[in-house]
Image (cartoon, rainbow, N blue to C red; front, side, top):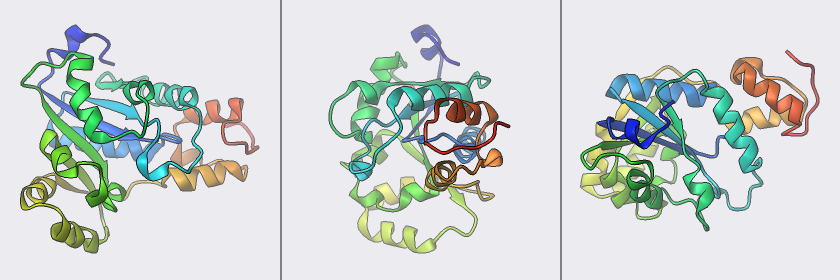
Length: 221
């Protein structure tokens, strides 16, 4: 993992991947891998959200648990970096604020190009994001388009976003095979005591079980 400001200054193309990661699972890893390979990213900064604006009423696993699960999932990835930036900021976790603060916070050089990594599901409601046009100008979006994705979502965005924002969004569309289950589906299985071994990295699954993060029972792997 990138661990110092000195290393950060050597990076030219950096992905920014935000989300609840509640829990992080193979679908997230799949999206990050595709984005990095298709756009030649030097590294991806994973940023767990403290209070996602669209999930203010949802109860998330603790910040400590979500950080620990990310660290386990990314332990072998030398080009992954985890930042607790949003945990240290009060109020909703707006992507606009994060993109403005991140370069100075981690020591990226002035000409470093930022890429906003998004899963297909992130497109729903994108037009309602805080200062969305500016978000899409601060970082080139990379959207990993799931095969069979709903084309109506793109049509809606074309009708609601600026022409420039739409052009940048479509420039970053990447078609890829379907990813595994969503975090919501994974949590539901864990809460019922079902163990989706294939959907969650082994080390993360062991952590969830040992800590009882989602309350479900189950047998160890």
